Image (cartoon, rainbow, N blue to C red):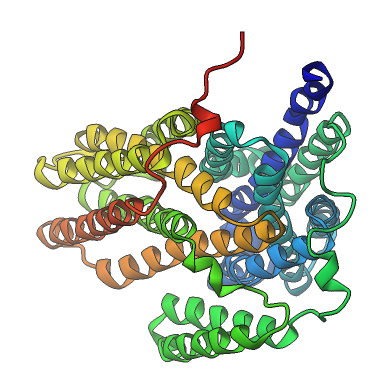
Length: 466
């Protein structure tokens, strides 16, 4: 009997790899295009600001707005089916992005890519939760976090390499062989244990899709994101928050809600998703803040700052899979709390060490990278394990939405905080104020981590049979 159960578990790795790599396309395409924006603006005959907002800001906005809707759709029609749909749309939009000659169609292709990512990322998270046995989820989510971070980090370098040799349009073609590899890996996967019918099929036959809730959620999130990015649109933020309140009241009455608010009553889920959001707030804030401060203080260029930040990203990427495995053995709470405290130690090191040059930041950045790597996988694993299987797509979409929102809030805070100061003393003062943002977000994440499971599940700690 034991031998008969082995093949699906052995062959589960291709689906894991296919799902994780597919999800990695979302952050890769967000950062990969950044370096080519000046050349794109020149070729398209548009202003740099319009191109940035049309191709980058719109990508982020659509991705945030549609994450929860993509997760809900995955629960209704099936996680693998939704993943495949997202992959197909990604390929079509990428080919259109390569071929379309004008700005507006190109911007629409980018937004379509973001919509495809909103289908792929929650489906991938749900597949990891449902396809893998509990004792393997920690390391799988560790790899997931490492791939997502690596994709975001290598995006600018890969984009500059491709644009420099083949032109900026060739950047869109990267997605085609990437997704072809994912499809090939998926062909080697074992048959799914539970995808013969969509998880929400029983409900889907009787309850129509919640269009009112979807519209309220999308419009409210869009208002919050846009309002946070520019002072001219600041009044949109309270409108967006009011819209989210209205969304909450509506969802309590909906027959088949886009987001089941009872998920937040699950302690491990709430703790996990808020840890992830706060971690992202700290990470993206630092990735945004250090280049600006280093450029004003030391006249450091993008390559110098990128080299220093890569130390943090490498530390994070190397630590994340290890953290996932440790959480399988010792539980999510201790590993996540330890990661938050290590990251907080790195922030304190940056705050109290003389910032005479970029190299002085390296020890603190290493600690921050290790801390961020230790928090993500255990928190994600605990959050997803706590939810019912049939709501895994919904939970994944909600988790992904909060992950993105954490980064957006961090960027907005720093945008208001840093300003355009050039005087070294004032810039250094703003740097220390920004460190307060990093420190408070990690301290809040540490408090949230206390809601995670204290010990590993019994099956994760049980000794292997001889």
